[in-house]
Image (cartoon, rainbow, N blue to C red):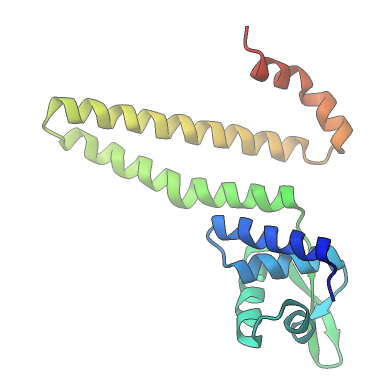
Length: 173
């Protein structure tokens, strides 16, 4: 059973993962595995979450596919699952997928098609939009690089390492 605080965290994580294009069930199960910290069977996850066995099965498959959980062995004949990714790892994974599968194809498609626009004003606007997408991809790539290079630091080390940059961002002079 989950207490109210745990339930709220799990539900918030479920809503967050919905914004990432995953189901709420997927996020809830990931949250349960993160909070409980123990290897759990599909049946245990079904009981704790209240979702149907088929929903739990589909969500566990998706979580394994994304690398958020792994099969940690067996208990009797049943597979047991554990969460292996931190929130930072999950966010990094989401951003990489977003850049690769959403942003980059839009940029590639717009780059090919902008030259075919015959109305000068529309062409100029599309070129501006394309430039904004390219800047966005650059910023996300920069963020991903920073995450990769700094995620091994604990929170205090991270704050010290990035505080000069954060000061510039919040107070641009």
